[in-house]
Amino acid sequence: MNNNKIKAINFRKQGKSYNEISKILVVPKSTLSYWFKRIELTDKVLNKMKNKSRLAWSKNITQYNKNRAEKIKKYHLDNQSSAANEIKKISDYELKLTGVILYWAEGGKRGNRFEFTNSDPVIIRIIIKFLNQVCLVQNSRIKAQINIHQDDSPQKVLKYWQSITGLSRKNFYKIMYYNNIASKNKRQKNRLPFGTVQLRVYDKELFNKVIGWIKGVEKAIYV
Image: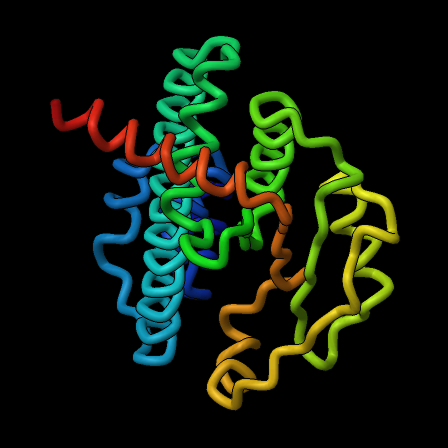
């Protein structure tokens, strides 16, 4: 009996798989199959091999699912990137439509003042740009009201919204705190890290103009 065969049989009796032994000894699995034809393995070794096989299968299926998830994620990110490239530089008219539609969805419709609340910094930046470039409202006329939870840092949140809006500290009202019990119980799951900010412009003429633009958009869509 050659040396490799003896080693192979010993490895097999220790519970090593065909693949493991083949790699260690550089022996084809067909040869190993012939060598192991008359080997009887103990129940302990058989159980060890079964457990190793289950573990290997578990690792393989986990890795397969991980690779598949990464491929799907990349596929969707590539689609998003391709779609993003379809959007070119926004004109003032397109900015006007964007701001009007956002206000239609999220803005205040009563009170004769421009009032827009959101937690998304990108949307808030768009509304600031809409006010500046379309409505010709300077930042000095824009007021802001922040709403946060009791355990949020008011200084940190204020600094954050100042950086987003570009507004001066004096344009911000005193910070308000949520005190709704249901909100308090759910906030850890659906937490807004910087609360919400409400932008206000006390201008009745501006308010009515924006409401008019909304009606114009609605008419244009359905006519």
